[in-house]
Image (cartoon, rainbow, N blue to C red; front, side):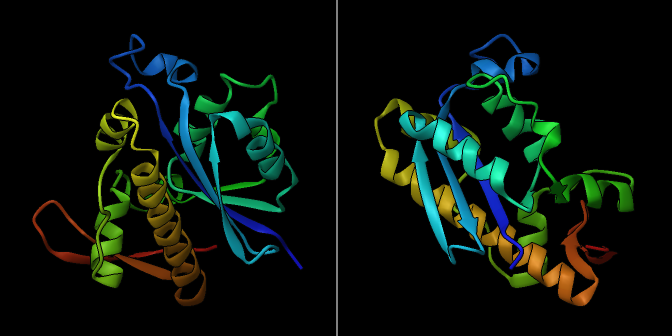
Length: 177
């Protein structure tokens, strides 16, 4: 059985806190979440378990995320010398961007395809981290991984996703994964 690992993480610091987007490796992991099809379940990781999280990603047959190549992997590079480009990955943000010619947020896809929306955002997760509210971060990150999984499975089954454009119109984008 192929082990697909759905993945997302939240950070301790913002880009502004670390001197810009070029320093993602300095943002620090607050919470990471995976869903493994082999395990048929979720796993929550805090910073003390970051090595175990990296090992799970390395063992995956495919890691699926939304902007994990451009954001989450660079954050993890702050903890490891591992070259994450070696991990078989499907970054749905990249795929949808290539199909449309511009980026759209995961929330736009979730709202148009499933009628649900994210429960917070990355900056809220950083505020929660500063307040010591790791359970809230974990809940938010778990929900994002669930949405990521739903979007991937829907796209794989139907060959398309829906999204809302900047004018609030529901549109369709073809996907091939």
